[in-house]
Every structure is written in structure tokens, then in C-alpha cells.
Length: 95
Image (cartoon, rainbow, N blue to C red; front, side, top):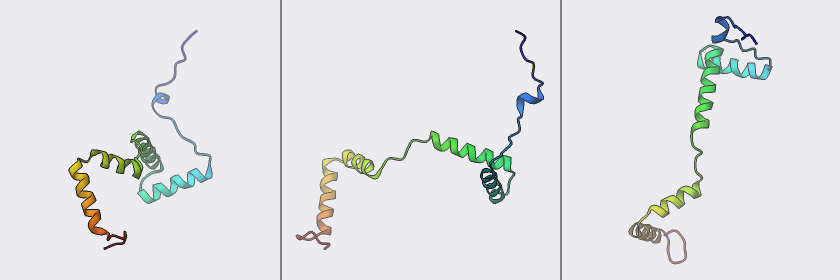
């Protein structure tokens, strides 16, 4: 089998034809807001999306609080409990 020879001009660049009207509208709006070309707007949007996929997911509040509580020393925990006691009276209402 003979390998297919592709002219060099086609190996580096390829056009993108957006046929979806909604997508084209979004691209146009983004390019207008960024004051850039549609190609640059697409490039920026795709780069940002890829970066967001590479970032670890944000932990939920319960996980963060659990990590904070776990990392505290007994003295830290006692200090937090003492401060909490100052905030509330014996009926559990704000002092």
C-alpha cells in the first residue's frame, strides 16, 4: 500500500465550519465582548474549559469543616468551644 501524501499546507491548518446557528451566535457574542476575532474567542474559551477540567473539584463545606476540625489540636478545640460558650447564654440564645 502506498502512503497517502498530503500537501504541507493542509497539515497545519484546517477550517472550522460552524453550522449551528446558536453556537455561531454565542461565538459572535463572545468575540464582540472580548473585542477579538471569532477564532481567538473560540481558542480562549476552549483553553479555559480545558483548564477548568484539569483543576480538582472544589470540596463541599462539610468536607472543609471536617478537615479543619480534624487538624485542630485539643487546645484549639477547647478555645473554639470557649468562644462558642461566650456567644450563647444557658438557654442557647445569643448573649
